[in-house]
Amino acid sequence: MRYFINLSYLGTSFHGWQCQPNAISVQEVLEKALTTVLRSPIKITGAGRTDTGVHARLMVAHFDAEIPVKTFDNLVYLLNQYLKSDVVILSIVPVIDEAHARFDATLRTYEYHIVSKKDPFTRGLAYFFREPLDIPLMNEAAELLMTFKDFQAFSKTNTDVKTYLCDISSASWKPEGVGYVFTITANRFLRNMVRAIVGTLLDVGMHKITSEELKMIVEIKERSKAGFSVPPHGLYLTDIQYPKNIYVNNG
Image 1 (tube, one colour):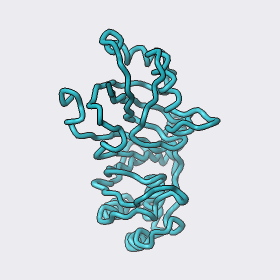
Image 2 (cartoon, one colour; image 1 turned 135 degrees about the vertical axis):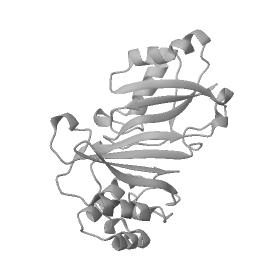
Image 3 (tube, rainbow, N blue to C red; image 1 turned 90 degrees about the vertical axis):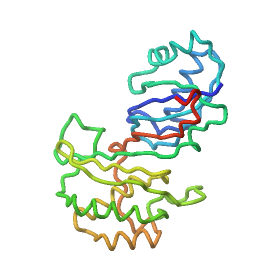
């Protein structure tokens, strides 16, 4: 039977989600935990790939296994007992056999956290950025992004991506604490896309470029024209949405 496993993790100690030859990844740790607890080799497929140092409040993956009812009832507890504190299993739910954690996802949401005041308690969790920012102007520019579909300008170069088309449904900045949070939702994201968008919007907020220049950057489709890629530790995958009909009993 196929299951969706919902988890959260602090990305600081991991070299991203995907298994790496000589580095620890979230996928590797989770597969080892499932294999140990279920006493059977388990492979998982994630909803996407977060880069080194990126966090997830919600990541979803699928795996196939025959799990006895008694074991399933305690599986979340057993996995959390096995895993270190930087990975937490939230839930495990049965889905139809054809369900796919990556291809069936309809919406994904990321947040990027910035603090304007140096704080030891946000180290590794938010990007310290001391320059004053014009947030209303940045929100105007963020709204402009939603009028485009092709985001090659914000994609990491030399990737094997087949299309640069994405449908951004929301993008905005809001004050939070001593800083700001940028929230963006789309049907899919390109490699490094959110971090490049944030860096470019910071240029708008510092009046280094105008909204019209941002529009030109998107239209030119050259990564070198866009802003810098902000550090990974301020980025969080926060939500993934799926059609209800892929869940057993429409859960």
